[in-house]
Image 1 (cartoon, chains in turn purple, orange):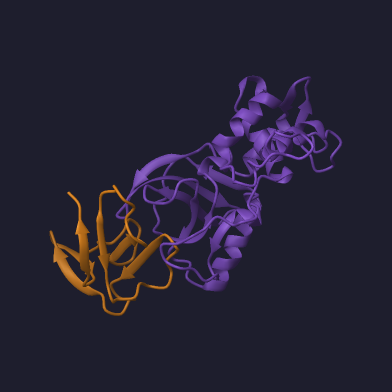
Image 2: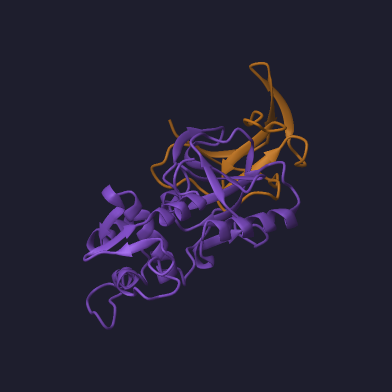
Length: 221
Length: 76
């Protein structure tokens, strides 16, 4: 289901229903700063389809490298909330291992650990590479530039920083990024899907790639 | 104490869950009043009409939700 993102803070009251171990910048460039009775926050406001509104926020007191998914307070049925959260997670291409907590799962106040299996995988790196390149001149980025930019969008975990066996001592995550560019024939990759073309040193995002990023709310409406 | 949040339906006390990190300005408090069960690991809320034990107060002509709490530490 396509997602639109607004430049402005939501005007409805919200409640938290999931926490991701990701920055808001992983999901959109359309980020504003605002404040409410709780605190100052960075946020982004989305609409999924024609009806479901939601926000991503990181309040000043939230841990670094997390963002919280909020739904309008008027949605109170837990089954409906769980359904919306699943749809939003899928539409924003948030991997399950990035979700540290979601409504319906027990939790302890004041305590939340990053999922132990959370690391950069190729499916997420493919979208990140597109997002990074799409913001550059001519929508082009070299593999090296993408590698240097990934940590601005993705909080590297201890697993990511471990050396890759075949390319010791290169960290594991760098090999994942390199694979995105070099695995040109991968049927789920950006080249086979028509979202990018391979260049000598990296990739260039196509109009179809921009359309895809727009459909997942990466650029302002 | 909390006002009606923007777009909200009723006065609400909102707070971060857990103790303040060292060096961060704010107020640490504890209360025997259970928060409304729609919080997250990072946030807690007490609604005036929906959360047992929450009291009403007036502040600057506005109705507010109020919880009785022990304040452990108030930083300037």
